[in-house]
Image (cartoon, rainbow over all chains, first blue to last red; front, side, top):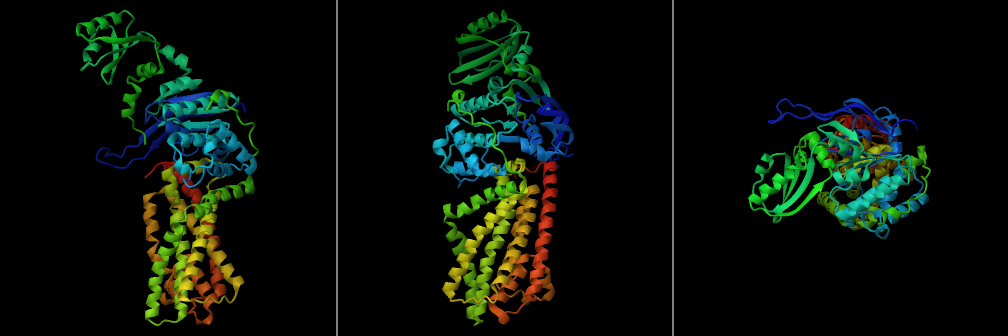
Length: 336
Length: 284
């Protein structure tokens, strides 16, 4: 029990590719490029990064679905290559957007089927299924066919499946992706309660929602292009975003905002159009630079509808480390 | 949901291990197939009536030729057997293709029972479901064309059937392992094995008509010898036998052992390759 829950050393995973006009040399894709991390038992650990950063590949290596191309990985002190069977006894995995299972089964039957794969005797397994369904608010739907569930209901059922064997280490791969706000909030709340009530249990969560990582995780690693570029508690990470001030302004709709970045003291500008308004997020050299921005907007007859000074967020840390916003990095995703 | 006040279930449930877990996992996986018979009753039409139409076409060929009645029995038995072959190819071998698409395969690979009990459950569920279909085909066909079967030795008949099913589903597991690594490519293989096997295994005629060596070659498919042996037991000396029944039983036992060993080896090998190549989760 003294070994870390998860431990990787210089972990590498590459994918072979086929020769194509855009890839005449059939160069392999490097999904993980020397990942080293250690997650102690009992920690809620987040892996934050854009699409294609290597988050899912890392989870798949850890849950024994993929063999590493190099380096080493241990889960619960067990090697994922040579002790895969023992690893599987201790883990569970839930992925976002999962459409697993069989539509003709009811929710309860589906969960019972999976409980049998873990060797849970039927009577206590069914009792536990009912308890968990009540907790996630699906008990009334227990006799409904899986094919008739909404996306949110389905994901709650998947979460119950993941918790059913009461794993030592739970892997959550983007568990709230594609869910509405309410369903995502429910899922997050239950995950938080589960680990809070079970000292010693560990969760590894991958997400590309900054607020999710910030809300849930004891520690967050930022992964980009297959490398861990930072790994600390969210507060410690945010303290990295030193040197400057962060403001968000809402103005009347603007066409073109390139001139903003040319103003004195403006280090970065991110602009988002919102119907008839424009949201401008500014990273300034210091608080004083905002006066110049306000004046410049007034000179251009752009009314400021709201203005707020922000504490640095994980998003700001990400931008400082990667040089792009997460959404921009998402568009440059490269993993399979 | 009020997560803050959620009643977290108590401590972990002790798990069964070893053979008890294998049995649990196999029964768990067989459940959707067995219960599916009751939930999706359209199978009665699609899996019984439609295949029967193809079989009936052969019945009329034999009738037009004034062939002895036993030929109609051959055809109906062949029609029932196609249900097992189709089940093995599409619901055993190709099932992993669907499971990969739906995300089940990833989950199957990370559960502690391993993939073998899950395949065992697929076989068990598939067999029960197909037995119902095949029985329906034999009953409807026999009633329509007044075919009489006379089982000369029920014990041996059941032995032949049981051994053939074990060998057949062993072959199915072997094919299923190919789907761990390949997707569409294995799909083509499954298609390739449909119609030619109907011919090669003598589904609609006595396999001896192919000639001795050709029939020996096609005997690698367990249904070839099983059909010939069962026809001998149902139609007696009137049937132009390929080999004596006991020889065929012995060969079927050998095939069953061979395919079980091969399936085990292939599953391990293909699982390793699929993990190495990243094919367990890549969708096609």
